[in-house]
Length: 53
Image 1 (cartoon, rainbow, N blue to C red):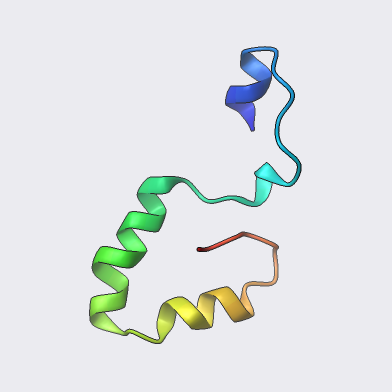
Image 2 (cartoon, rainbow, N blue to C red):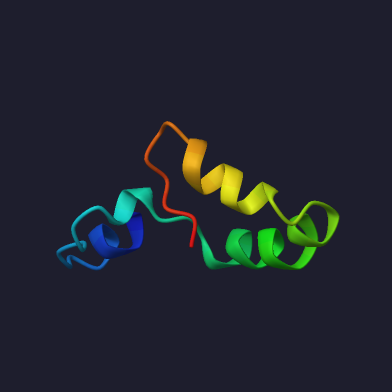
């Protein structure tokens, strides 16, 4: 969201809830290998509105 504002662009709606792509990659590459159900658990139970794809 800050990048959009820094470039005087209108941020997409709800973009503040998206996680960075490198975090998404980490979850997919490392966390899922350790515990495959953990990603689904995070998606279902994260109470602060972050969007984990």
